[in-house]
Image 1: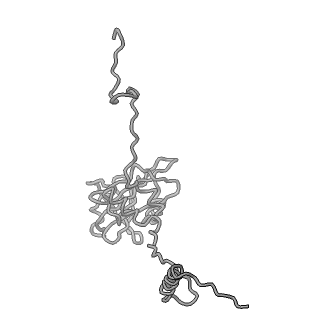
Image 2: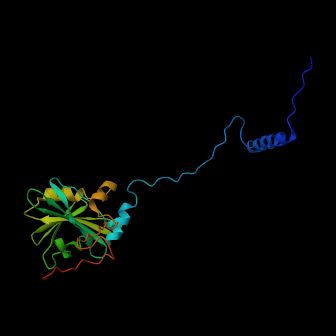
Image 3: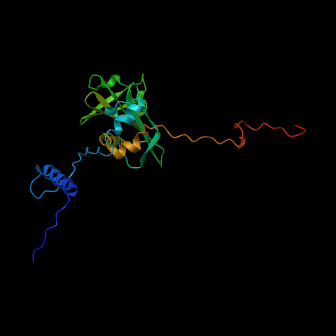
Length: 223
C-alpha cells in the first residue's frame, strides 16, 4: 500500500521558511546552546548619605570641610545652636542635661602657633589676656573665665571651649580629641535638611462652599 505524502500549500510554507531563516540569523552570533538575553547596564547606586554633608553645609553657608562633630558624656547637641561662624566656618553647642553646662565646638579657617596663640582670644572674648599651654598636638588656652582646646588642622583650627568652673579640663580635653568629621548618620543629626519644610495651607472657616469662594461677610439683621 502506497501512502501519499501531504504537501503543504505554498502560501503556508513561505512564512515558515522566513521565520526559520530569521531565527538562524539572530542566533548566528550566539554560542551554541546559549540563550539570548537583553543586557541592561546598571548605574552603581550612590552610597547612603554620600553628598549629604556637602549639600546641607552649603545650604547653610558653611564650608563642608569645616563641619565637625564631637561627643562628651552627659552632653547632647543643642540643634538650634548649629550655624555659621564667620564667613564660612562652623559652630555648634552641646548641653549637659544635669548641670546645663555648655560645650562649644567652633571650626574656622586659619592657624595657631606659639607666636600667635596668646594674641587669639578664648571664646571670641577680644581684649582679654590669654594663656597658652602646649598639650600634645593641641593648645590648652585660658582667658576671660573660659578655657579651650585648640587643634590645628590643615588650613583651619578646631576649638572646643567652655566655662572653666562648669566643665573640668579633662572633659574638655576628651571632647576636643573626639572631634572628627561626621559620618552619614551624624550628619543627619547635626545639620538641618537642605530641603524646604513643607507648608500646610491654612483652612479658612469663613469661606462658603459655593460661589467664587469670597469670605462670607453677611451681617444679620440689626448688625
